[in-house]
Image 1 (cartoon, rainbow, N blue to C red):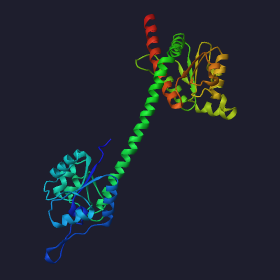
Image 2 (cartoon, rainbow, N blue to C red; image 1 turned 180 degrees about the horizontal axis):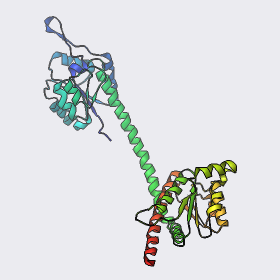
Image 3 (tube, rainbow, N blue to C red; image 1 turned 180 degrees about the vertical axis):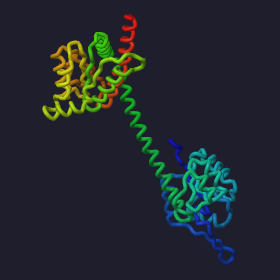
Image 4 (cartoon, rainbow, N blue to C red; image 1 turned 90 degrees about the vertical axis):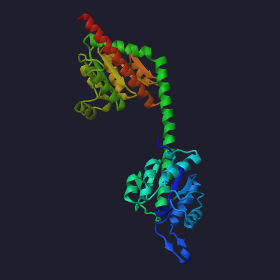
Length: 359
């Protein structure tokens, strides 16, 4: 997260004023300021932002501007703006990265580069605009300070929102870690048994059929891809088919019969005794998944379910059922992914070992 801006430092001529001056009788100097800027400085003060003036001038006009804007911290006669800002930062126990400085001329360029947020009015010199992190749309004395205040306060709001997001993310990650710990404590026996069934099927020339809906369909395709392709090592392709990918079959069955049959008819066509048929449903209640598992059992296939803690009716149609010990679909899906990767790694290692031993 960017360093928070705690201090807004403003040049006077060309930032709070339009950079022009008028001389009255007795050489009295007058400056033009914007009520928009005046109001914005008050908003910044009420928001808790520290304020300062940093100017190369040391005239009564500087005192007048400081008084009108009610800014007590003033670095006057500051020909080295960067040094003046460093002094201000030290006085407040801040780093330069906690400062926003608005400057308009060449003398401000070095400071604009070094502070946390360097801003230049629209009519600043080319050197100042090039050095600034951002060029404002308003000119000096015509709303530049107000725009700077809005920008800094907007950054504060964004930082607060980011902090809230981080807190929520910490909660989510904590839930996920707890769910993974639950898997480690409760689920290893059933996952090891699933790995054994996959290994048996592959070594005995059987196949693995997988299916599910939505994210579970993606998991089915993911696992099939790992087995037909490869997981970690170069290996022979192994017979694994995701029944979620053929849109012609899915739409034909869904249209001519019903959606609850989209996997069952494929299982009836493809499953043989000794095959492994895997249904994935985070709720354990998906009708098309349950129906396909029922038909797989009727054909002598080994049925495996991947679901959530509340398995619903899925347990009744599965020889093995991994009930992810987690609350809510997102955490269940995270555990499914870990379980599948673990199973693929174990199966790959054992199938390759067995075939190497035979060779």
